[in-house]
Image (tube, rainbow, N blue to C red; front, side, top):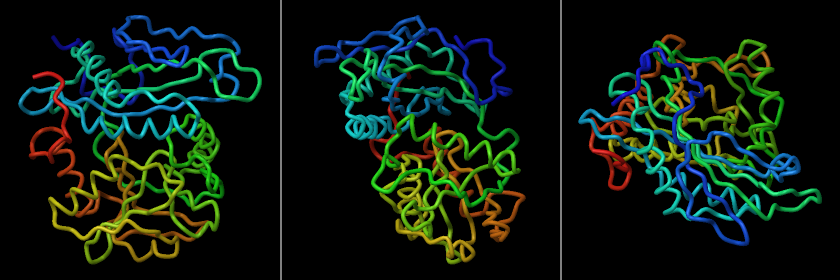
Length: 341
């Protein structure tokens, strides 16, 4: 029985649902974990997460497909990326199979909050982990909590994805050999000043350059870049300080295997941008946000696809990937995890 929610007017925000998953790590082991109705986290004032920001998270979605199933898109990749984040932050890893099981449990426990097919809304799933015991000397915590909550969200863009204007940022998102390649809370805290500053100046996002040479395109802090060349190739920036976006990796596969496109995952230089035909940002929330214009300190880089609508190749990529997610197009093996029939 679906909840009485105005699905077509949902924003991208938090709505409390009935159930969430919680597991605790103590004395070197994770407990079984359980579904709970308690949405409050109670921790010591000296908890590791509050003192030294020892926390990481993931983001994925559950959808209702055309034939009524409730599915998740590639949760195994979120599980393995969280392992990478935990290892870099000296946190205990949560077993990948248990991660996927926990996602299933929490979605099943909140099925009434999965929006109907065709509404444009989805159920956003947020797994996260943090150091929970008191830590005053700078060192990893000894105890941790892994949690997953879900919240129904509307489409990231109301009324369709209009191309956005972004700027080349003077801030660095990550340090060379730092933590830019993992989904640590601290990376997002670092980006808040830059994004508020960009918004105040009329830009939708920041384009971050590589921190070592500041000549190469990295990402925006919330999404990876995709570019389409004038001869129809998909190009995605390669760097050790970019978060490996699951959406971007999926789009690369779709481009090559479904659309027969040539795909290049390589270093992309700032001075190449003027030669591309289309540009987009990709991530879980919006899938693809088209970029119409990039402001590089007063020099405007305008993409031929324009400011009115998503470029034609980007649109094809978007339609194919969302078609796979929604069950309209057959998915590659293992991509779609069925949670409820």
